[in-house]
Amino acid sequence: MLLVLCVDLDDDLGRKTGLDTPVVGRDNVEEAAVALATADPEDSDVNVLFEGVHLADDLSGEERVEVAAVTGVESGDVEANRKVGREVDEVLAGLQTSEEVRAIVVTDGAQDESVVPVIRSRVTIDGVRRVVVRQAQDLESMYYTLKQVINDPETRGTILVPLGVLLLIYPLAVLADFLDLPGTILGLSSGLLGLYALFRGLGLEETVDEAVARARNSLYTGRVTLITYVVAAALLVVGGVEAMNTLEAARASAPTLDAASTVAALVYGAVRWFAAAGLTTSLGQITDEYLADRFKWRYLNAPFYVVAIAAVLHTLSAFFLGFVSLAMLAGVLTAGTLLSVLSTLTFAVVEDRLGEHEDAPGNGKAA
Image (cartoon, rainbow, N blue to C red; front, top):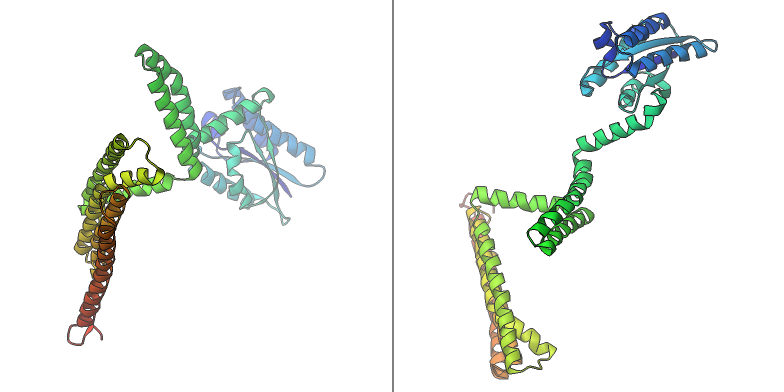
């Protein structure tokens, strides 16, 4: 048996004619189509109902055919799909047949076709017939596609944001010309669009969102690292400025610097500030780990490593610039190595001993 289902997802039939749905039977569907055409001749669902009657007449000679009209609700959302599903169940329950029922779904556009999976879960679908006014078919499909793009958050961010930036370039250019700042405004607009394209292309949205979430959680929970990271960033900036100043001073005294001397000047000017930034962040991290009861003695190695590395780099760069002797360089290299090795051994032993003491019988933990 073949069932021709005319779908009116937004319930124009029920709202405009007052008829109860579902409407089952060829004559009843034809009368409903006439009633809807009388109430609103421009409604596209009129075409759907008449097409359903037309299909039923064409196919009735081959097998038994029944036609029915089912409707959703005006909002056209999930509740509309559910109501269509309930009315399809009602139609199927009223069919007096022992044959397998197959269906042809008749709609007036892509929006109504969103209910096809709901119908398919109840009856086998042989085909879907879309019926719209020929002149309006492409227009309706384009309208529904644009509506879906605007309603979908991911697509909206991907398409509309760059489009909005592009549309803003012209008014920004006019404003820049009025303020005599053409290069600044256009450069800023192009830079923002380029950054957005890079973020989307490299898939960095989740990384940025996670970084913002961590920063917000750090602010709310009072983590010390939030402050130390800001201080460290400032120290890095100062170190970069100091490195450039040191390089300029070195070039003033020796205009023809080789590559090694240039790198040495940059390192010599920046390493102290960079070391201070490393000490700040490591101490902040240690403090947070202690407050969170996750502290381990080996975490204290970090400040000693920072001091040792900074001392070695500072002395090595000073040697290339001719500020220290080879003997001084050898002494600092040795002292830096010993400092890192001794700190590692010391805190490893302390952690091991304290761990054994805590796990010993009588301290409340298993041996």
